[in-house]
Amino acid sequence: MATVLALRSFYRARPSLRCLPVQFPWAPRRGHRLSPADDELYQRTHISLLEREGFQTMYIDSYNSRGFMINGNRVLGPCAVLPHSLLQWNVGSHQDITEESFSLFWMLEPRIEIVVVGTGDRTERLQSRVLRAMRQRGIAVEVQDTPNACATFNFLCNEGRVTGAALIPPPGGTLPTSLGQATQ
Image 1 (cartoon, rainbow, N blue to C red):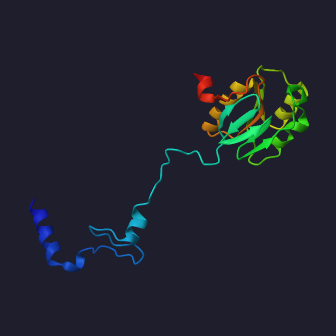
Image 2 (cartoon, one colour):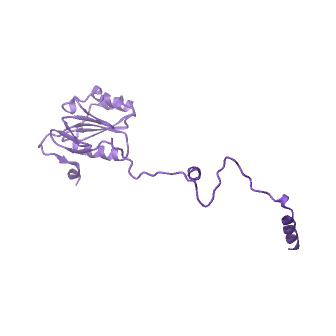
Image 3 (cartoon, rainbow, N blue to C red):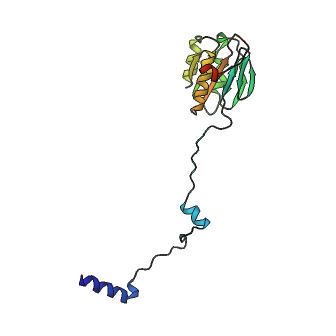
């Protein structure tokens, strides 16, 4: 204990032996209050988004025998729904779907992961060469009846997947069917 007291008194007596804190010209000095410069260096702002959907995300609101209501836009007849756009699709029935009619899905960037095909009021089988051509280009195809295809498309878009839809309106009444009503 005596040596500790002796060293302490020796240290206090010789100020030249003390190590002064190093001052760097580029480092900001921090007091009890931060200046704007200190705030930018020490307290970076991080943003966490609770809702990541953009305004351009496509959602199918309703459908009927004449067409679809997508993001408030009425589309008459068959349509192709792309991640940021909506097109008329020149097919009459599932038998008219060819490689050429699907070509717009593989020409896009960013590349579409999956195309949901709605074939009307029943799930119909597509030609095997059409499905093979899509698979060779790395695009999955999900064939369903139109009501289920609309719901699947909305679900995949909500997950943030790069999704396209090729939809043929189901025959029947002309009253619009909301997807909220169809799933209940």
